[in-house]
Image (tube, rainbow, N blue to C red):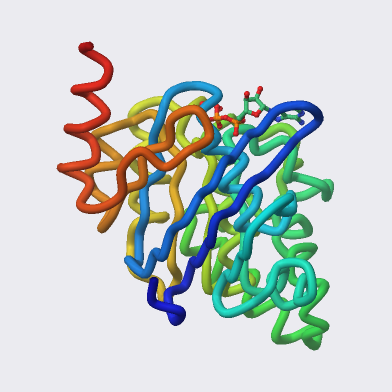
Length: 231
Ligand SMILES: Nc1ncnc2c1ncn2[C@@H]1O[C@H](COP(=O)(O)OP(=O)(O)OP(=O)(O)O)[C@@H](O)[C@H]1O
């Protein structure tokens, strides 16, 4: 296993209550965009949360972007952004512009730099005209774009997206996917049940019952997943 890969897991187990959500997972992932696929309950979200420092390993070793998620939790929080399927969980401020600015608070930037970065993010995600709108009154698609703006405004090195297109119509799903996949200097780990979307990533991981069943080129991994489904 190369020890310079962006995502390194060495015999990792994660126990949640009395469930082994991940078991003996060893991975070295260095592709820029990685799809995570597998059946319901196979451990995908647990893996995503582990990368973001939201759950900790019960066994084994983890390095994300060179950081130990426990001892270097602050560095990890600064460099990893998370996007979930339900954007409501991530929207905290009354207006669209305030919500994006809120994401920048930990950076302690000056007022002008904050305003510049917020404007840039709103523009990039097509939200400039909605900047003073109530964030909770946006449509589902607009809310997900707001969640993306809040994630990307921090210029993360890694974006972990857990089924970010689940509740979106085809047009917004396509828009959100293209923002996530475009190379804006970030890495992406994308948990998805959309195998067409997974195929657009540079690499894929297949989970089954908390274990890694396959890892490699998305075409091969998806073929293995589909073969298992037809058995
Ligand atoms: N907080 C928790 N406490 C106890 N068990 C949990 C908890 N969260 C998840 N689990 C269990 O861990 C296992 C893996 O769940 P996880 O959410 O990672 O799967 P998933 O592949 O993301 O599923 P889905 O596709 O349905 O979202 C499942 O058996 C689940 O029931």
